[in-house]
Image 1 (cartoon, rainbow, N blue to C red):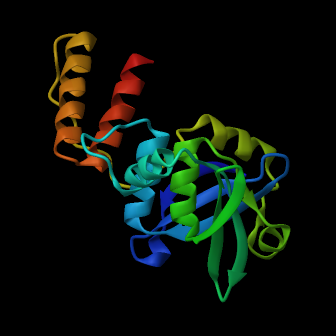
Image 2: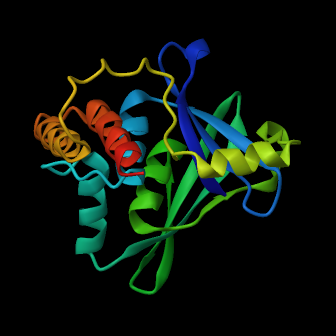
Length: 196
């Protein structure tokens, strides 16, 4: 599976929906995750490095300090509407499996560039078939993190596009320093639009 995107989920009180997409198929798997986990996934997908390591970065550093790595993660069960996962890593040549919440497992997987697997049973039970091929292609060309939050207030007009770019880059650094990662992601999107 690959991460198709993140979006807010109005029906679940401010939580986020993480959408996984079948790499060689047309099924999608939506998983409701918390705000903190969504932020951890979004920061890594957007290549935003906070000034201090966040929880999943710390966990990656600890795993690496033992000369091991995450081989893959496996979302292996769905019980009463709750997904279960395992982190599979290599330790001294042996394969070790550890239970985890899917959101934490995915946050680790992207930090190790590890593949994400979902059992057939889970995908058959909770997967959604995407019938529109164009919709899938359109989603892939979009930013991996899609937010339904209101757009930021318009910026004061600068004299040139270079001035705007410099001002936005300063705001991005300030947002990161203040650990306001939601704002940083929005500013990064504005910078990318301006560069295009």
